[in-house]
Length: 357
Image (cartoon, rainbow, N blue to C red; front, side, top):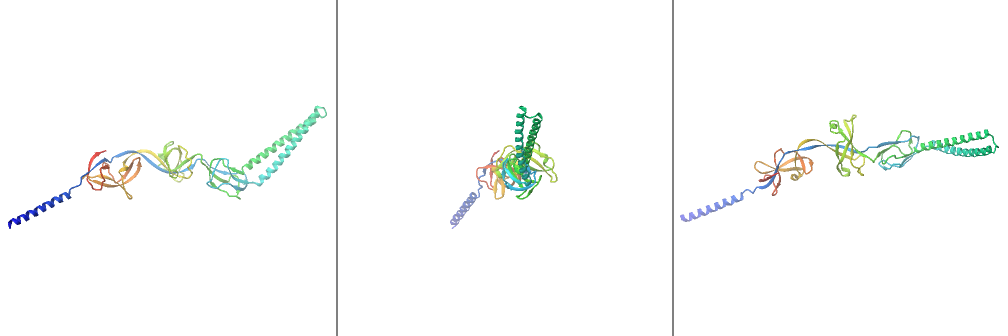
């Protein structure tokens, strides 16, 4: 009987020990993941200042006429591209048209008189040479000839002046560009000095930048800048500060004019631009972009805690600098950053540092 109890006790003990051994295997810690780290250290970086601007025509003008008349034709619309010498507007002036008709008649009459007088002069001269006309008759005819020649020249000059005035009735473009504003319609009265059209050149486009008064000191003549124009997919093309207008009037904004290093055919006045000015140095906390983890709208990276565990740290990012990005908050200087690992990381997993960059 005692022997049976002993066997039962030994069997139970064996089962308990076996069970304990199984639990130890199940609770065994996973192996630490080998990782490469680097320390979060400040990097001296050129400070980039960004300003807003717009494409503008450097050559702007307003067309008007020097005559009084009625707008007869308007051959363009606002926004139309134009070429030098193109007829844009015709002004009708009844007064000048009447004067031109009179002047043409005067030229014809003066020309006929001149021809007749010259013919008579030649006749008298021939008679004089044959002693059939007196000296006085020849001199009188010579004077008459010169008088008709003078009157013919005066009539032509008068017609030329009237034609010149009438040329102002045909407004032609003095530039290659576009019509930025149309101030008249057919039937309106045109008067000397009153604007008819506003034109802007497309031959030399520049960038006009609005700069707050507390930042205008950052700009100097001939400063190199880069220009981004999203509308035509231009990203940080080169430009130079050409002019700084030293008056902010009442707006508190100064004007800086930037000229592009190259010409771009698809640029249009009015396009929005961003100007990037690199001035000064400051320390920034930069990390490699390839260690950034994105989860929805959150961005983070893995750091190492004192227990050699991977910790997912959420951070706020700033500007990009090549293959690096600035960390604005969420990370302290000197912290260890995991830049690569032998397998996938999770928050709290054990790691083993095998390499320090």
